[in-house]
Image (tube, rainbow, N blue to C red; front, side):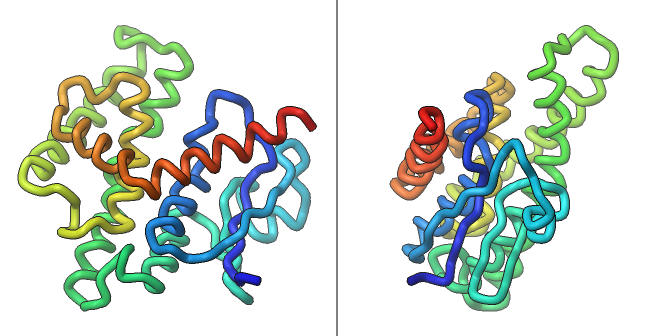
Length: 214
C-alpha cells in the first residue's frame, strides 16, 4: 500500500468541477508516476479532523507517511523533491522552479482570483470595483505574455511551476480573460494537452460524478 494519500471532497457542485485544486496534485502525481490513492472528506460536514489537516476547511491535503501537508503549492514542492520530472535536483534548477511556483501563486493568482470572483458574480466591466481588478490582472498577464514569447515552459523543462501557472490561467481562460494574450492561451493549450493532465482531469470529474448517485 502506498503512503501517498490525496484527500479531497467527496462531492462538489457542477460549477467548480475540473477546477478543484486537488487537480494540481493529481497532475503532479501522474507526471511523476508516483503511486497514490484518493480519500474523501465530506463537502457539507467539515469536522474537527478535517480542520486538523487543513485549518481553513479546504482541500486538498496530502498524507505522506507521518506527514500531512496542505496548500497545493506546498504539496507540489514536496512532491517535486521526489521526482526530477517535477523539478531538477541541481541548486540553480530548483531555485528557478521555486521562484516561478511563487510567481504563479503570489503574482498571477493573486490578481486572477479576485477578478474571477467578480466575473462569476456577474459584476460587469463598467460597475464599481471592477476596473482596478481588470487593470491588475492585465498588468500581470502582459508581463507573462512577454515571458512566454521566449520559452515553452517557465523554468526550462516542464515542472511543477507549469502545473501551477497553467492551472491558474485555465480559470482565466474559462472566463474569456486570455483573449488578448495568445502566448498565454498557447501555453495553457500545451499544458492541458499533456497526458498526465488529461488523466488527472478525467479522474477528478469521474470522482465527483460518482458521488451524484449516492
